[in-house]
Length: 157
Image (cartoon, rainbow, N blue to C red; front, side, top):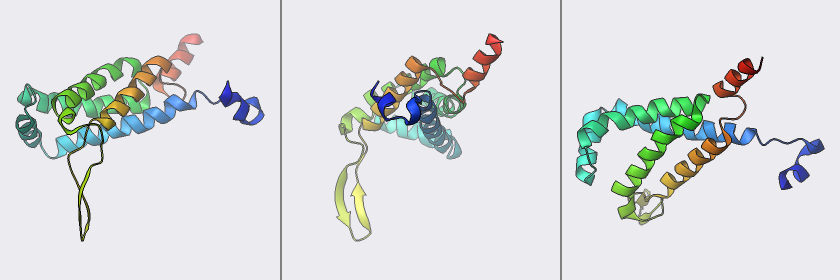
């Protein structure tokens, strides 16, 4: 209602919100998944073992592909509500096994060097933001400019 007051000529733009969320969330997941795959899953497996994450070997394969392919599906808006579920599970698992030990804040300045600030390990803040965005996409759907919207239009014809 408040948005209608500030939109030009009474137009509503509520369908743009899922589109913007999809682009940012999808790109973020793809970037993280690709970073894990491009360096090889062995390195990611070592990180998982070091942090005490369960099922490190199998997770080192499942997580990067879930992030990369799930991120792509979110980005283009195909089955966004279903695709969000494994991504949420990935974020909850990372939060509970790794980031929870470092607190909430995703940016921890632990020192200052002549080259700039020195940062500590990130907390679970970013994970919660990803989860919130994914839940929003589950509730609203993929919105306009999505494969889901194209499929719905074709079914309506």
